[in-house]
Length: 118
Image 1 (cartoon, rainbow, N blue to C red):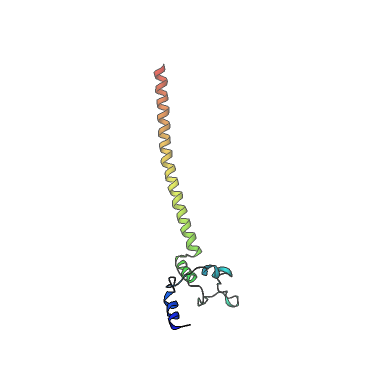
Image 2: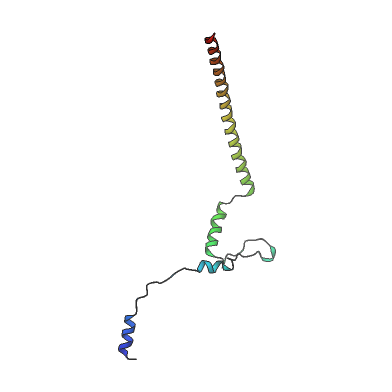
């Protein structure tokens, strides 16, 4: 093989176009499950997140910031239910007053029609 042939082959080869792909990496990661550290000796304490998948670490960080304790959740839920109940009662009271007025008008108009026929 001569030097000219080597140069021809080297320059005749096409340029590399694809530098990187993430194809199949998610599949490989999930094949055996993304591992979460188990508590050491059955003791629940804050575990090291070293070696944990970065996406899971970020998700945990943001979800923990938005979580409330069970008591706070119950208080908020009860307040919301009380507000809804008060609103329903208010609507019912206004409906009742309108209904009684409407029934009185219907009765009055029925009496007037009966008088007009006689």
